[in-house]
Image 1 (tube, one colour):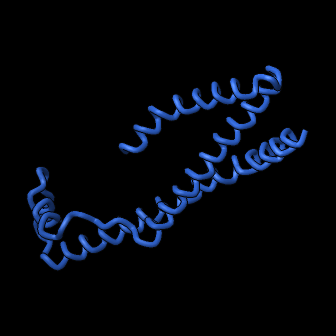
Image 2 (cartoon, helix red, strand yellow):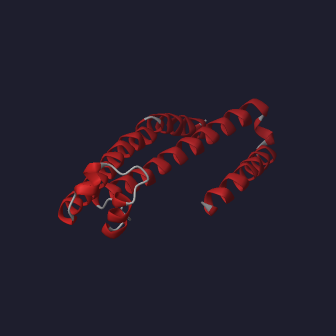
Image 3 (spheres, rainbow, N blue to C red):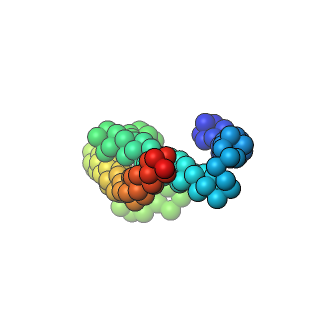
Length: 150
């Protein structure tokens, strides 16, 4: 999270410096051409960052899909909470340790399945960060090449 804080702080400053340097360096091109080039580069930068972010997010979701995060409540804590609940039911007082163990195992299995389903959902969402901006990036990259040929 620290890296994202630094990026969100310094990224606008870097973009502003890039715009100023590019405008000063290419002032002989004319104002409209400089603005057109800057716009093209900014769109390329934004779409490239989206594609890279989507790729990272896909990798993270695939890792969660292959190896979902573990469940962190151990059996003894589960059993303690199950027996010492503030509203005890007759059912919870009659259960044996084996029955509580079965419920615990089922809860752990359900938690892993939930984590896998969340990873699949995140994978699909992350694909949107690649599928949507990639054609825009390719179009503007071709436009940039045509502008530099002129």
